[in-house]
Image 1 (cartoon, rainbow, N blue to C red):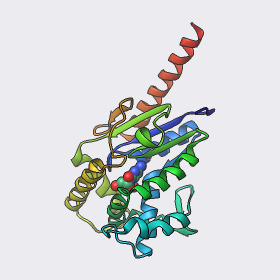
Image 2 (image 1 turned 180 degrees about the vertical axis):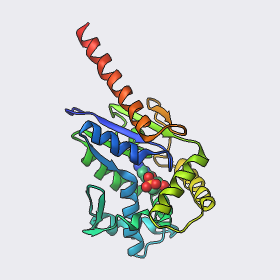
Image 3 (image 1 turned 90 degrees about the vertical axis):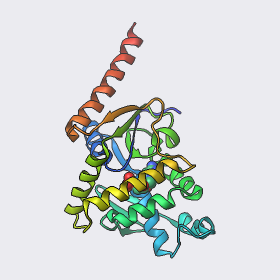
Image 4 (image 1 turned 180 degrees about the horizontal axis):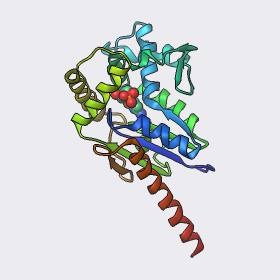
Length: 232
Ligand code: DC
């Protein structure tokens, strides 16, 4: 695949700091930013509105028309599902859980893969999720896998939800997070897992600025090494 600018893939579990780091890295590089988790959340909202249950034996058939018609648009921080602003609604913990359930289905993953590959094909993008470096763009020029201690991740997620006005305890957040990571890692299709060639960054003791700085340092070092090789 030839593209003028690189694709930067950032994968990892819930609460490892992917979204903030990806957004900040994209801003620093002048790249676009794509939050693929938000796309799965939009699917969950659309499926719920259509009365589709993820545990239904015929779920994929019932979802076909929803997936065919789905239109997901980003506008800065906002996300629109079929023209409706779902930026707030998508953050609810039950939508995260539903997104995780629907994301295990082949039909859902195939549609998201199509949209995500189209969005990133030209490069110049920071894309974050669970399977960007393994399944969506296995040939991405840069791959990062962001991890953090589970209690730190739960605390971060809890603070984030509290700020957004969600009423949930830290303990509930931890339980839901562990279950969601388990499901996302155990599923058959494109499970959450570090790509062999991804650089792992542990953000437990790092600020977002430090995570972004570490990513930029890796990117610059690789670009410099490639230039040196060309010159030699
Ligand atoms: O990043 P997030 O928490 O908003 O993602 C919600 C769910 O979507 C997550 O639990 C699993 C699914 N997801 C996925 O399967 N693949 C991705 N690339 C991104 C998210």
